[in-house]
Amino acid sequence: MRHPALAAALLALAALTAAAPAAAQVAAAEVARAVEAVTPEVVAWRRDLHQHPELGFAETRTAGVVAAHLRALGLEVREGVGKTGVIGVLRGARPGRTVALRADMDALPVQEATGLPFASTATGTYQGNTVPVAHACGHDAHIAMLMGAAEVLTGLRDRISGTVVFIFQPAEEGAPPGEPLGGAALMIEEGALENPAPEAIFGLHVVPGRPGTIFYRPQGFMAASDRVDIRLTGRQTHGAWPWKGVDVIAASAAVVQTVNTLTARTVDPTTTPTVFTIATLDAGVRYNIIPGDATLSGTLRTFDVDQRNALIQRAEAAIENVAHAHGAEAEFSVRQNAALVFNDPDLSAWLAPVLGEAAGAENVNPATPPTTVAEDFSYFQQRIPGVFYHLGASADGVDPATSPPNHSPEFDVNESVLPVGVRAHVLTALRFLEQPRS
Image 1 (cartoon, rainbow, N blue to C red):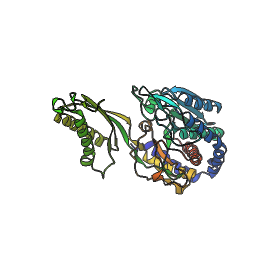
Image 2: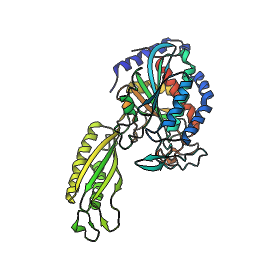
Image 3: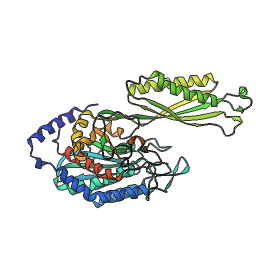
Image 4: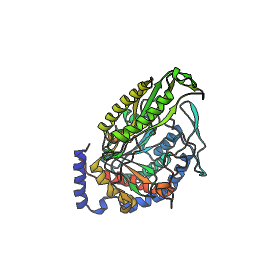
């Protein structure tokens, strides 16, 4: 998955940088001053978006806020790309390369418990039910940081050679029920990487971590994520006469144990991390009735395509055998929510000193271990080279290991890291466009 043309361009950049005077670049200190000036706006946007979260493909208010800001900056704006996605295009004063920066916009069906004065009280519709909605994953911060980066870069338009594409993506948390594609895949299908066509793409995500630190790794960084659904069909009977039916409760328990054993006993843990979790089990309505069917669902996280495919085949066969041993039938299905986040190796190496300009070299770790959480930014990386990195955003003085994780009701973003994210976006775009064309 290496890109030879990109590697050659990066080598050419190194030679050019060695020969060119420092004045050829927009200085990091100048960027820092511009980011400092826009930071109050970034904080205000983040708080407003946090108070008004919207679920995937329902981000109408959010998209409106983003589009209005980009238009006010004088950018070319396309709305409705992937239902509620927004794209802004900044064309520099001179022709050159094209780079994309991406932020996700959707919130989660979570009841917020942060106690913030701008905490969400919003609700939405999920699987036919009215649910609380909150930005429990930090996408509000992602949107605000990219809006801030768009403002700073627009202020530097006269000194930019090339084009910056700002991608504000819906439904990163996965396709809502009934939708065939999630946000990244749908935006790509509807032309997000065309007219203009970026040569590379970058994105970030706030996570528990020492505030202002940036960490990532080349190649496999975040796991591929699959949703697994299992339906067991037996025969309903009285709880006092289990022998007169087919007990799907017992079969369900055996299926859970089988799944746990598959990962513990058939996957080499020294190769790549693998997680297979059954997270829901829905069966029965009364304490003394053994139901006739049960549904289970879970998630599979992998870092190797062949290993994933082999594990799915083993799981389907094993679950079918377990069901038959109990006299039941099993239906097994798998749906990918996100592919492996694969950071281009050459681009990853090039990016480290750029992020060092943004956060301080001592705060950048380009060799962090892989993580089993997933991101559909991976679909952009399947089309063009890209790097996705994490931004530590735990509260001051709090051990990141005990900091509330993403998707927790208590998850919050340390707002002191927002300028770091804006600087990272801005400097990444500037330094990429300063490269000669391949």
